[in-house]
Image 1 (spheres, one colour):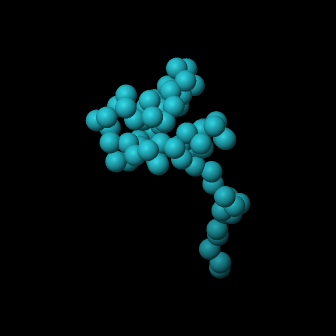
Image 2 (spheres, rainbow, N blue to C red):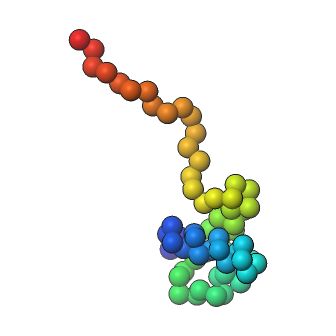
Length: 68
């Protein structure tokens, strides 16, 4: 099952405030259908970057004008 943005916020808060680890978060919410591998990747990303947002690579697109 997909981890939504609300779920990511919940996971982050439980990890930071209560110190929940991977196994504790999966057993706390069995109805969510979270996979251990997905939560593991998310927790590693949260520890590395401090956020669950995507990192956009490259330069922003420049403004494109029509040629006359």
